[in-house]
Length: 566
Image (tube, rainbow, N blue to C red; front, side):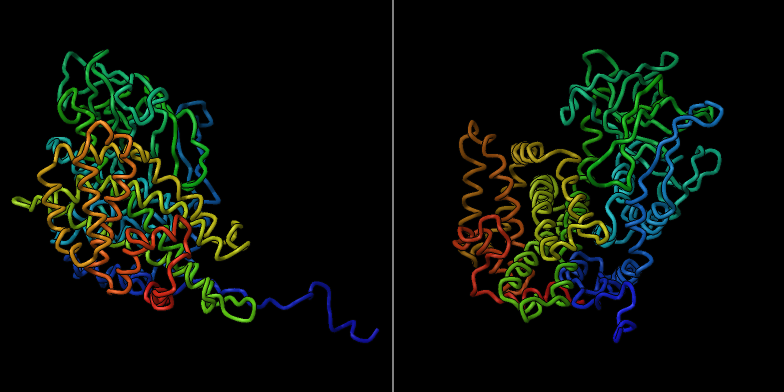
């Protein structure tokens, strides 16, 4: 029986040629495009904090939080042991730790803090982008809280009570009224109903004034439902309801607890069983005379809450760009450590082509959301340039359409780099892929965004033409970009009757022109040229929609090396 002891039970092989886990690096410093954009948008003062956070977010114990929060999905308890209605949502401790980290960095309110500095919007968006590479579901209540602040600040009496807990950098998970000493709060949204979806103007939820009052700041009781009620554990929600059968929709602040200290009559019917975003609770609710306060003018609910939606759409762009970046660095790291057919994957020409193409897409998405962050801040200042308003109002919905769409294909391609290891749930790639569709759907699907681009152009033509004038100087140095911009203007100013059917093509070209201009201005010349030629130039005919078809004349190896210095 010679050799029997050489092969004890279970020792059939040695594990080799597997990539080690990607951890313990500075996610901010390793992203040169992000770091440069932070400085360019006036947020260099926040770079040290971003670097500290970038290191913390890649620690193994922190990376494990994302997996735990998604494997242990929230659970709803509608009643307690005595049969009383409680509608409590139970989360894994990992969820609360993720929210604690997000709030500690001020990502729910940084630009709105009393001592906010110039560049704070870019600082906040960069931090949000870093956290989005770790976990997506926990971003949802942070986004809605952040986006609610500009709306609530327009209601001085209400905001005076809420400012402290809204701006707090502490995460207080207790399910108690603010008046009972809760130290921080989160805000959710409830707009869509069964019969309407994106068409919120078909909403039928009714609001009745209490004690004969009513109007802005007045108390109401709400009767109706919401088919998608985001993050029902939040301390309050902004919802839409009608004050008359055929009247316009109004916006209401609906707290989790009524003024008498009891749970408000917002009954959670069930939690949604979602494809992705599983760490976050999404629900269906019914209002049984729920208490609410009107926010904004009566009948002006949609314009009131659209201000909130503009911010959430920006975060959709950032969240999708974060998924792309997270998938990209995982793919590059894997290719640097995995060998096949006698060579490392990253040294094989075809794999380098795929990675370089993905890197171009990711960098362009990063430049776009950081420029939008700057425009959100600049356009809010008195005397701002009209093209800043165009970036915010016209380019944002196009970016939301395009970047969120690209994330779906992008995460699938990055998963393929990992092969079978990417398809299983023991690694992060499958989660990235399942997360990718939500941002295309939430806050307006693709068609809604494209139609919004057309509406914004009609209403902001002076700003739009100021934007195109600003782009022309850069486009003049790149024939493919110049031709694409000229074609875009022709599409927007052509026959209005055919414009709606072409809205997706218009939004796509608008986003690509914006990205092309930003790459030309801020990326190395060869990187910018590779993006412009393959997205807008003659080479686009060769690339189609498949990553990894860059012409051989571009420096694939250099593009990959620039993308991730880890």
